[in-house]
Image (cartoon, rainbow, N blue to C red):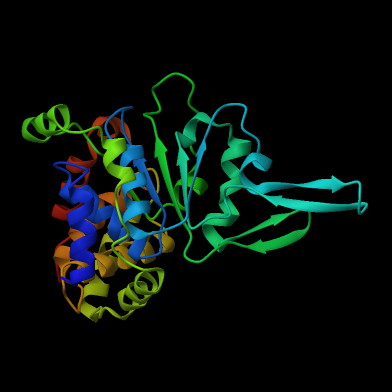
Length: 305
């Protein structure tokens, strides 16, 4: 593995105990220039992970607490009339940053949620007829509470599809939880973190991700997965071509994280749950199954070429 990435992972793991898979998936998502959705119960470290990644990667960071009274202008910005010059001056919102934390994104109304659509897809925002580019790199990390909780507005499919990966933190194992209970407050430790990578190094790694080789046989495997979801009666609808591109991008980043120059089927299998869990909607009794069991069934049904 690249020594710089090793330092990034090591520092992140020093704060987020017992979650090596989630940390690597989050980092792979950012290396693939994707956006990350973290869904879980309150208090399991979703926001902490976003803060640690921002500090470790040395990125400009803004946080927006999504609430039911949030307006699109609170995210994008607004033009204010200047009496002295008789002109309007644009005041940029928190979206004009390198990493935006959309905290509890599903507690805002669909109108506020939709303010992120153009930013996440095209890295720009159009306000009052003027298109303004966002900083490079630009990432959105959104946290989401389970939809059965009070006061949530489920994200529509078009919004969910903008996220490259969705991960869940889960409860820590006993040893990791013991370390949290007996250790220093996480917020104090985060304030002491130093960047482990420069912006230029991060963008170079993102370019290297695109150069990771994908063989024709591996493409056959990805297409077989897509085809199965479209023809299977177990899903409301199959995976889109954009989902296939997301799967390849995440697999390339996962291969880079593990020091490989080509994507293996194991890389696709490692990122598949995060890529498809928010894109596939099972039917009937299968809707009650966990993401892990559904992914295992999908991988079992599609043979490796």
